Image (cartoon, rainbow, N blue to C red; front, side, top):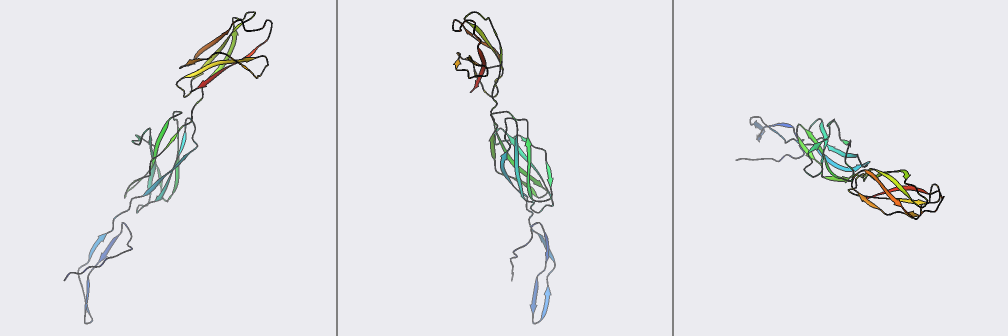
Length: 222
């Protein structure tokens, strides 16, 4: 009748040869040789926490935890605005286990990005879990321009909003006072801007005659 045996502890991706054997009263007979090959193992990889996050860049970290049955693996990262990714970093060939990274730039500030580690070998492809990060915000930029329309009791304070940064809207105003370098205890009225441009505030009938005043422009992003 038929008989069988279970072999444990075999190496993956390896060819083995075998034959049946029968012993009867000291005489051994053998069946014909046969062969089988155990299945290959793909590599394994994990997605590690990102690092060095700024408004325009981030470091993607991964770890090739196993080569599987291949001699080397090609590692990279998939990344994008959603878990569909859509972009991939340049690849790197690794002949051993270990961590790897890629510095991703340029990125948009105040934006969430998804990424996952990837490893490819002749024996298959592996992906790490999805991770995400949000780049830092970029503050607006503002410059103080020279005052104009100076009268005995008033003046026009001028400023320039150079950039809105990552804000959709920026509130601009001025702070002013009597001391050079501040403090500037007196705020002006504010206005909301959605794009870079010049702006001004008129101080009419509130300034003392023959007095030096100091001021600076201010911008708050949402």
